[in-house]
Length: 212
Image 1 (cartoon, rainbow, N blue to C red):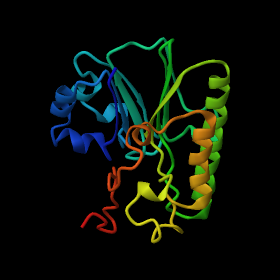
Image 2 (image 1 turned 90 degrees about the vertical axis):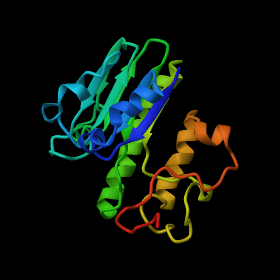
Image 3 (image 1 turned 180 degrees about the horizontal axis):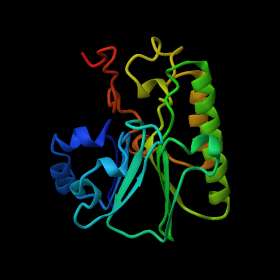
Image 4 (image 1 turned 180 degrees about the vertical axis):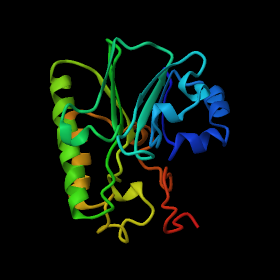
């Protein structure tokens, strides 16, 4: 089974850059998209109904913000949206699909870059999610998590660890939750396969021209 997780930073924008051709080429069994930045009524049929896939969208109440979607060839037994806590369920961040033999989460975790209060919100979100997943795993369920966690775990996972040590995304209080993920039984599949590989990053800040 091929699962792909992709933060598109706006599904309407990426649709103009060959998104559907890429999906066809990669041919995932399940595709988890983060930051759709669109509600269903803003999308045309080509994005709502990709041939061969069931699609599930969770949109933020705030237009043009956050949002997730899942395209899957295999129909799930059930689908739910959110974490079941009102504080976290207005931004379209979470889709949970139960396929019977496993549970799949597609999550766009909060970014804490707008200040201390947002970091605290992010940590509460992590805590709520981990409690839910731990309960499911304690009940014997297999849980897969795709998404954008918005935190680098270890120094090997980002380009400039010292420069970012006091910036959200690499704060000690955020990184400890990555430890908690592992303690719960979740496995970082990239690091499982490539434990020592360096300079493999999935995101650069366009605001600071970090990739230049």
